[in-house]
Amino acid sequence: MADEEGDEAYERNLEAQMEAASDAIRAAVLLKEGEAHPRVVVLAAARVAGELGAAAALAAGEDAGDVLEGLAGVVREAGLEHHEALRAMTLPTAGSA
Image 1 (tube, rainbow, N blue to C red):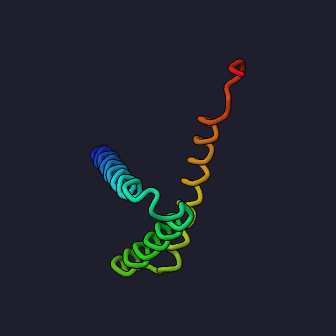
Image 2: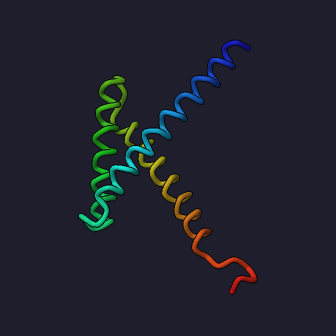
């Protein structure tokens, strides 16, 4: 029971850290808005994500290919979820036309 509570607290802490890091990255990218084409910004972010993934794999003694494959899956899922959310916000609602 204590292990489960500790695991849940650890997971909440990781989620809070990830949200804080995501907010910081979004804020940094928004500050540069207009200075580069959006696709270039995305490619630069992907490059940095790959570099961070490779460094994390090295630090953890893990296979870089495995870590980067997992990272690619996370990027894909996050992108697809965000795309759907954006579409839902931009599509007219029934009866509002």
